[in-house]
Image (cartoon, rainbow, N blue to C red):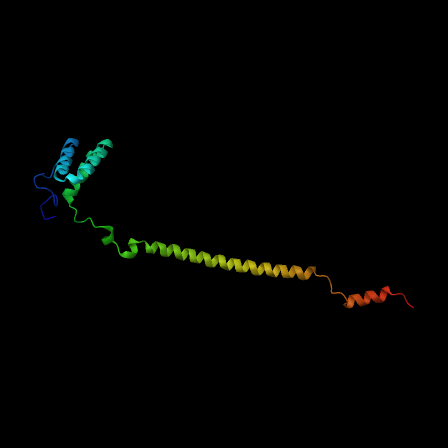
Length: 150
């Protein structure tokens, strides 16, 4: 704002201490706008009905006055306010992706360790439960004892 002015971009006829318009003032403004633009008449009527139904006319009037006082030059579309990677949340997706990849590596490593331990355990138990081979030293000694002398 230039020095000495209270409001930027405000209508000088409204003055600094302008009061919020009433519901009838807002309805009259909507009616004038609808008469000026016939293709928007149905939309304006629906908007007026919604505002009256939800008691939002006072808040809408205050928001309009604030926008007129401050101006709309600072309202920048999202596409122009952020860079392309922030607009599409690529930084968030990169973090999620790295967490998922780390989790996949950890699970794969654990699976490999459990598989190796299971294989070792099965082989060890298999060796412990195997019968001695037939026809070995133990079989010859048993045969000599069991035969009668002739």
